[in-house]
Length: 116
Length: 117
Image 1 (cartoon, helix red, strand yellow):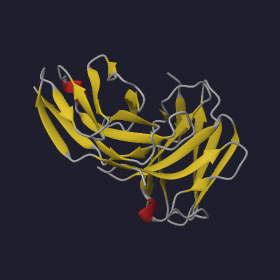
Image 2 (tube, chains in turn orange, purple):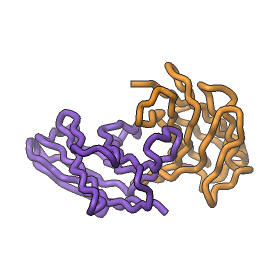
Image 3 (cartoon, chains in turn blue, green):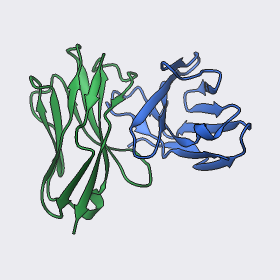
Image 4 (cartoon, each protein chain N blue to C red):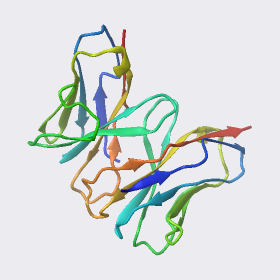
């Protein structure tokens, strides 16, 4: 299957700093990428939908100024957590959809963010 | 609004036995897709099986099969011959507009499966 990578896999930062997480589709062009957030033992919550070359569509309750999403190319989307606080600590997962007609979304391995 | 419900927070099964993980959904759309993902402790999401709303036969992938009952809006996952490596979180998900690959997935709450030796 198609491969999606995320970088970094783990990040620890101080409160007030910004953190950028990259999501890359390695062997296919991703017209759409999704960003999810997951707390321990809970489900994945969709944060936003990212389409190449256009502004991201955020889910209700997600602060777009807090979670900046950029989808600059067909293989890269970035999520920047601005002025991070301890409550932003979570597992962030991206997924990508190509144009091959395959039904599944391909997920990245996730990024564990810890804000001290 | 679409909704996915998994009512079993945790399940136990003996190794080599079969287990059914429940999933019910709610949607007003006639065209949708149903997915099951496995998430081990490492956090990666592993795609298991897919069922389209127009598919007449239940989907099967190796030891995984999906018991699709459209009238009851249920899409239960059956794992046959459980293995210790099957211990993980399992998520049911739905995407409306079956041919819209760019459509978002809505996930259920998840079921934590533990396989006993």
